[in-house]
Amino acid sequence: MHDDRIPAGLDLFAAIEALKAERNAVVLAHYYQEGDIQDVADFVGDSLGLSRKAAETDCEVIVFAGVHFMAEVAKIVNPDKTVVLPDLNAGCSLADSTPTGAFKAFLDERPDHKVVSYINCTAEVKALSDVICTSSNAVDVVNLFPPDQPLIFAPDRNLGRYVMEQTGRDMVLWNGSCQVHEVFSEKKLMQLRMRHPDAVVVAHPECEPHILRHAEHIGSTTSLLNYVRTSPLKTFIVLTEAGILHQMKKAAPDKELIAAPPEGNCACNECPHMRLNTLEKLYLALRDLTPVIEVPDAVREAALRPLTRMLALDLGAA
Ligand code: 13P
Ligand code: SF4
Image (cartoon, rainbow, N blue to C red):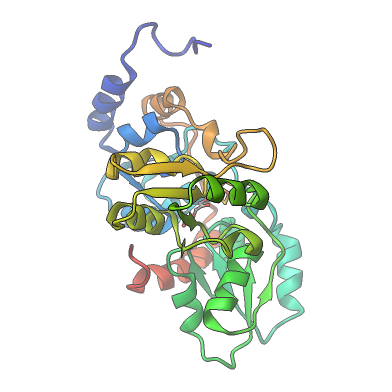
């Protein structure tokens, strides 16, 4: 349905390019955005790459085509810049699983533990953490701590379990999960493998352990993209949000890419939060410089410390 705030017949792609120059704006997009948004973005990446780009930019305005916690990161590292998110309701089930009060009580019960938080959490939860990680560098970040240091890992229990397996260390896990990466069906995956015996399975570590055990390669979205691009093999079954296939097709047009099916007959391998952003909303965000992301100063300063700790590490650059 046409949005009355947008002139009829407007070429959105051209209008967005003109506004980017006029506003001195950069558009950063996550791989889980719809294809058109990825195509107008100045940079498309995973959470780590996007955080780095946000920290580096000279532009006055950052349009963050992703979800709320990602735009918050851009604001935390750029308090003097304007950060807009095309749809302010673009949240995340992982960030939602970690209410600040309950998380603080959980930490208070374990005062001897250091806290490693996955970037998919609110600024308030980051402010309570010792270091932030992403799916690109979680194993390396955990390995920075001496083996006898008790650790809490939050909020993704699946990534936490994967990191425990990779590092061989025990951690206390917060019980959160990604609603998209938990929908994949093992039965349908096995059926797909039978139909495509030469296919390689690649998976994001937010998937559940019974899914990950079928994967030949596990990694962040950038890592999965690079694996598909550089592999000599031809067919891939991809277990992550289906938006990544847009970049995979561009990077490896000769390869056969199969988005792994969810349990039900739904499009739930598309993140409903990420997909709230549209090209129309992105145009409006650039034109009207709203909705803006604000983070209260005290939270921002406390969240910046563990975030800077991660960004200063030369780890996990895919
Ligand atoms: P990465 O961007 O680290 O691959 O994580 C995927 C994700 O779920 C982001 O919300
Ligand atoms: Fe959050 Fe999962 Fe959506 Fe990523 S894909 S934003 S982790 S709900």
